[in-house]
Amino acid sequence: MPPCVLHGEISMTEARAKLSSGTLLWRNVDGAVEVLLVHPSGNYNRRAPWGIPKGAPNADETLEATALRETLEETGLDVKAPLTDLGHVDYTRSKKRVHAFAARAPEGASPRCASWEVDKVEFIELTRARRIIHPDQAALLDRLQRHLGTAAKVESDELASADGDDGASVEKTSA
Image 1 (cartoon, rainbow, N blue to C red):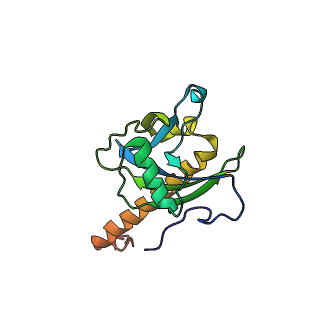
Image 2 (tube, rainbow, N blue to C red; image 1 turned 90 degrees about the horizontal axis):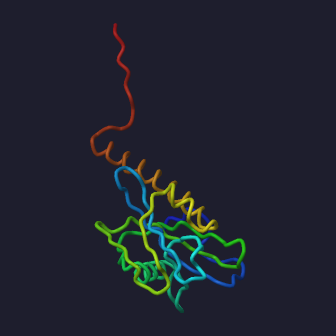
Image 3 (cartoon, helix red, strand yellow; image 1 turned 120 degrees about the vertical axis):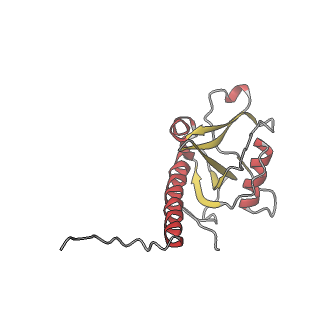
């Protein structure tokens, strides 16, 4: 199956001072979507916004591999789930481009601060995540929601067709 790109392009068309790639992990808890966010460490970052685990690619490393490596390095989570390309966001104040990939969190995931780069790692309900995420990364939450809505519809359609339901409705009328 070809990769699904929900927004933007994989290639860069203009020079950027920095390039990074990360994973937007999600899970469902009691019907609510939670996303995994990290907070940068250091006294100078105490008021900094949260963000997805991300970092710069190594030479000849794919963006997907970078996202998975950075997630492992920052949160201790080894993600094996298929990734969905959420495209990229460009930071407004810097020339940074962040590529993001969505994935369902591993079952029973227990993230931890696995790097000096982060001082907090948490699954956060989507509404709260919108309030604390880096403003330039907020669009990634919208793209994740669209992806999850589309994925839920496809799953529902697949279940219906497996049950022999073709989705057509028949209305009974009395004669």
